[in-house]
Image (cartoon, rainbow, N blue to C red; front, top):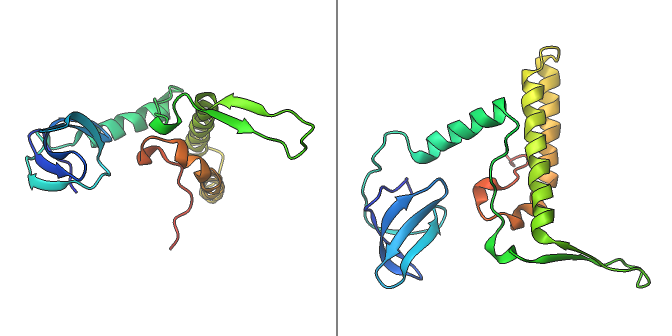
Length: 174
C-alpha cells in the first residue's frame, strides 16, 4: 500500500474503522472509533476505505531516509533503534551445558544495544570502504560482499527489532 495521508480512512482487523491522524517513518497513528488512538506499523495490512494523498510530494519516509543516509555518512551519530515491545524489561539467560557452571543473565536491552552498536559500526566500515581512495573498485566490491554476508549471519537477531526496516539483511536469493 502506498503512503497514506492524514485523514485517510481505514479498517483494521482488530481495531475496526479509523482515521489516520499522523504519519511517521515506520508507523501511522490512527484514531479508531472504538479503540481510541493506536500506533500501527506501515507494514500491517489495512483495508483502505478512503485514501487521502499525503500533503508533500516527498514522503516523510523518503526525507527521513535521505537525512539518515547523510548523517550516517558524515557523522558517528547513531540512530535510535527500537527494541520489540515483547522484549522490554526481558532477560537473556545463558545456560552452560556443564551443570556445574553458573548461568549468566543479561538484561535483553543491554544485549540489544550491543547488537545495534555492531550494526552501526559495520555501516561506518562500509562507508569508509566506499570512500577509500587507495582501494580499487574490485577490492571495494569484494569487501562489500563480505560485509553483506556478515549482515546475513546476524539476521537471527532480527527478532529483537520492533520495526522490519531496522532488520539485518544479507544477500537476496536470486
